[in-house]
Length: 481
Image (cartoon, rainbow, N blue to C red; front, side, top):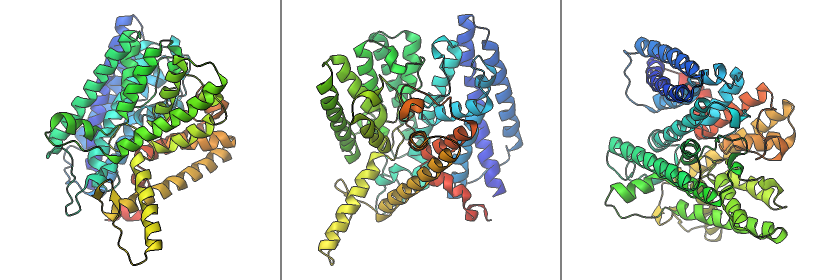
């Protein structure tokens, strides 16, 4: 166990060195802008780099083969310590956040939740704004790495669905993980570049375009303006955001299969479900909203944008959708549960789990009618290991348990029911805004006390790591020799 901890700490320290190096980029932006806050980023990079290097040299002799226990420790260590290593510019820089607020903002960024405790973004220095966006972009890339490679090995991630019944190997599009990882990175970079071009073409400034492209593809939701996407008046900007949020919510294995292999592309059932959910929700919102207001292209764009933003757990807001009628608030509350596709940068329970649970109900009904019948469970046209169905059910139960517990804790800390429930839900699903005047799409998390913010920090990381990986830390059997 000691060697597992040392090895995980060594790997985390190497990532910390990379993070320290990237702090120089927003520092350079501030320097070129003539803002004296560039020195804060230089000092933060030096401090983070020194501590990371110290840990790296201290644990350099540790070498461990990959086991499930080591994987659990490594994943947790990365997602708990890397946000901690990124708080210095937020504490000592122009934002002047407290430690709790800086940790909340950093965790929200890396988990691509998008909940914020910052205001006055329009007047903030460009370096800090860029650092927030970079954190979310790195978080999206980290989510893809963990979600596509590590979590499936731990039998938690959605890529289990691509396991062959007779093998422990994963049926990913490329035979080698290194090639697969390079392909995913290339797709991520390419989509980010295309999003930047799209935003600039729609009228955004280059700085806004770069920041929003990073937080769009990562389905994060940080903006450079307090009004989020409500700041931009061009309808074409709203459409560009909606398109690239949807692309970020699709499985990246689909892109790799389409552009880097010669295999026949088979549409995953969760992709079909993804677009069915979006289309149905947009129709419901549009029918009620446009029956009471004058029809306009801007309204339609906002309908599509906000629905996709919630389903993909991005959290951008183009207007306050809680004022759109009676059906919008409960509809958006339900959409918060879904999330995007497995293998994407989106959070949530993931659409494939809802497909799996529908199949379980359907199979149970068949067995009730024909008790002697044998009904293998299927995902699309593929018969899948029943263990995957069990995994989906177990995670859903754990999700409900953590949601209930965090809601109770937030209530005990003095928050009202709407804040407690929707705050817990939006943290677990990594969506961003909740409901109500305080943490709704037109509010933020500044009014919450430190205890509430730390509770949500735990919920955000638990939700991003598919809950079970975090809960495993509390199992005594994990720490036995």
